[in-house]
Image (cartoon, rainbow, N blue to C red):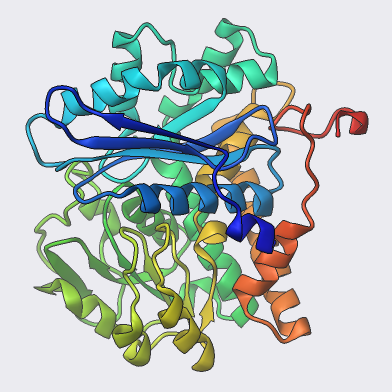
Length: 398
C-alpha cells in the first residue's frame, strides 16, 4: 500500500484558460483498469498538489470498495461565487472532453452539481459525463441512459432523488456501521455534521430517517445546535437544498457561530464539507466517540494522530466517503435494471460490512482504522481487462 501512497500520478493534464488565465487540472492517478472515476471541483486557491492528493484518495476508494477502476480528480482554481463560474467550468470540461468519452467517469465535487455537468455535456454533444462507464461496461447508449436516468428518480415522497442522496446515504451508512460497532442503538445515538452542501445534507437526511438524532449542523456561515438534544427537524431544513446553507427555521435549535459545531458533545462527528476541517486544535478538545469524515482530506494528519491517542475512532475519509462509488457499482453492476431501493440497500450493506471489517481488524491487530483500511486496500487484486462494476465474470480477465 505504500506504493499507492507514494505513487506519482500516471497522467496530469494542466489547463490554462485563454480568457481569464486561471489554471485547471485533470489528474488520473493510475491506468490499471479500463475506467477511472472522480469528481470535478471549483475552488478558489485550488492547487495541482491538492488535485493529485484527491486523485490518489479516489484510487483508495476504489480499492477499499472492491471496484475495478482507478482514481481521478479534476478542478479549476476559480471563485465558485463568481458570475463567470458556469462558463469557466464549461471551457475546462470542453478541454478534457476526449477523456470523458474514453476513460474518465466525471462526477460532481465541491461547488459543482450533477445538473451543471449534464447541462455542459449537452452543449458539448456528449450524452452524459459518465459515458466512459458505458464503454467500460459494454452498454449500448440507450441501455446506459436508462440506468443513468435512475439518478433522477425520487427516493421517497419528499422528492429527494437518488442522485442527490447517494453519496450522503453512503456516509450515513458508515456512521451506522460505527454505531453498531460501538453498540449504540440508532434511536439513542447523536450526531453532529459540519457541512450542509450536497454531501452533508444528504447524510443528515439519511441519518434522521434512520432514527439517529442529528443535534448539530454547520455551514460556512453558522451552526445550528439543538436546544435539548432532540433531533433538529431535518425534513424542514431540506426544503431548499440548492444554497449549501442551513435555512432559518423556527424552533428546535439555536443559531450560533460556525465554529461552535466543534463544541457539540455527541457520539459521532461528521466533517462533510472541506479538507482540514479537523486540525490539531479542535482534535484536542472535541468530545465524541468517533469521527466519520465524508469530505476528502477532512482530517489533518496530526489531528488524526491526536484523535487516535485519545481513543476516538477515526475512519479514513477514503472509506467513509466512498458512498458515491458504491452507488455506481450498485446502479451499473447488476445484469438487469435495479430499483432505487436496490441501489440504496446495496450501498448500506456494503458500507456497513466495510466498516465492520476495518474496525474489527484494527482492534485485532492493534492498529489504527486507517492502517487497517490501507492493509485491505493493498490486498485488492487488479483486473485490467474486467468490467469495473458488477460480479467478476471471468477471472482470466486479470
